[in-house]
Length: 201
Image (cartoon, rainbow, N blue to C red; front, side, top):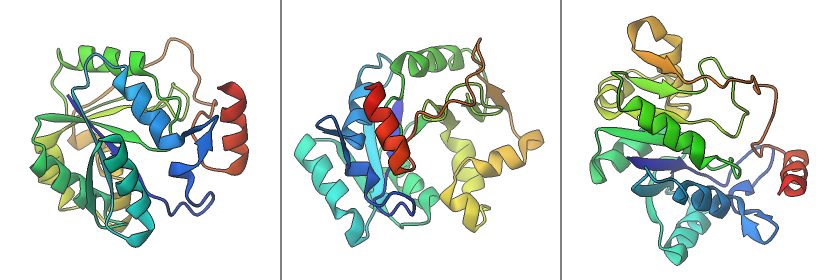
């Protein structure tokens, strides 16, 4: 399984958050380190934009020897298409770069269970029962390629929304937590989130 991390520096609420540090390590570094703990993920690629604002991410990946691809800032779908053409895989894992506490155990369980199923998306967000920041989506590449050309402007930036909005058309399997933690936030969107995650770590 390959994992594609979507990352950018131009967050409106917390600019540059991807490379902000928590206890000496950047958020992106923590995301990558946690994914590397997975026994099922064989390749990690950071998909960022080709804008000057994201050159710091490219340089970070180069320094850390992490695979990195670039593409349009707001057309995330095209970034993923280009990444998947460069690194072909039948399925891919999508993780957001604002998830410094992403859990490798959840990732491995979902990959393991997904291997026994037929699906377009195997997700733990539809409906959500895991904390925000522990979101894991496994997407069938063929389904993504076939449908990404129909995405509207919003869906190009939020690449799985098209599938959820047309859920009757697709095979979507939801991985549910035994204890509902949907109200817990472990992602970093604001300065307050950054402070909270720092305390947790």
